[in-house]
Image (cartoon, rainbow, N blue to C red; front, side, top):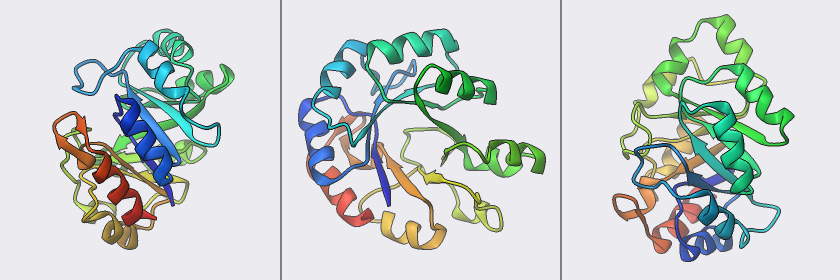
Length: 201
């Protein structure tokens, strides 16, 4: 099970995620998020992350040139696009040397036409709630008969208490958590990070 802990802002919480066995740590660069950090801080935190763990930058409807420039300054391995970005942006990012993730709300993904879903099958995708980072889970019934046939991550309202059940129900390739391991909005809790990884593993 691939496990990504997102929205990290401190050395302590990055270390907690890495030491507990996370496959990826995420840093937010999307405007308006309470978890946003600078590229410089992300680069500093990323230096504490072993090469076996992905460092992921989360962007939302930002110009692709800005995304690439920020990702380079932050020394990221992976870029996650969390808005309405087209497939062409994913190809551009890989051409620039980054791994990629593309997030959809569960409802937006299920509403795609079959040809559109097929076009995204070559990508790693993430299915989230309507409002990313709000801690609100999407209705798992939305995916009934529409679970992606490709590599995909489950996100949206996950926490140490429900992640194992949702993994069993939906069989994702991995999980992504942010607000579900916070003591207050935007503030990560190292104990909850460890509990989540233990429950998801």
